[in-house]
Image 1 (cartoon, one colour):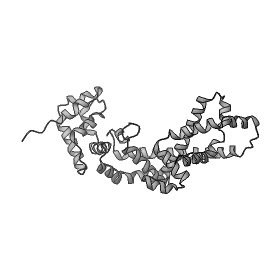
Image 2 (image 1 turned 120 degrees about the vertical axis):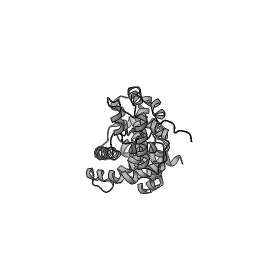
Image 3 (image 1 turned 60 degrees about the vertical axis):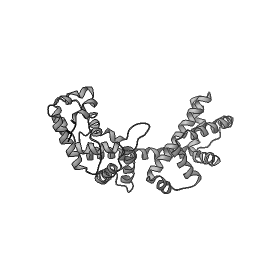
Length: 298
């Protein structure tokens, strides 16, 4: 039988320059074997090549004056599971959900006890942890193994819950302001002339901004505004919570508004005040305008 290849050869080439001290440990092979055995013992269902895991470990080891002590303190089993998740292992994804998400939900409930809060945060966390976005690896790759994975996930979930609550408050305030502005009298003849003059430019900018949206956002807008599907139904189609669908819609509307403003600013030589006046009523009428554009594009 051929001797087992040294584990250190899978780790050493991938150490960062500031962490090269780990490669010089006399007990390196023994420590790596112990870490690997611990990880596989904790998650025997996960099939992950030792070379892949040890490279993942090497890239996350911090500089240390006591490298052996630091290496032995790594939460190897948690890092092993996280590495498998980053690699897209469905079994690892399921284990994270089964073993850690109940703790995440309990942590969120202490921040926001509303019925949908924990479900929404878990859905958002699931998307961030397990899927790549914009060429960036899944967020699970950020876990370094220097603390328990459960604590890391709870902290991430609590931050999300707080951010979502703040976003909801800001959105409610913005909607109140838009409603107040929409009820103001509008009898300025110069403003009406400005709108008439640039109506075609506005429609073109709006259509271009809508076309620039990612396919999912355009489809969700069409399903909701044109087809009349409820958020729950769209969520079923995308396997997402209705609050996640609501967030997609809000983001799509915001991107259209920002894109329309940017395109008009580029095309028209208007002052900031004139541009603000031209677009003042757009948020209140946006769904109607988008619905017409999406319906005509079918």
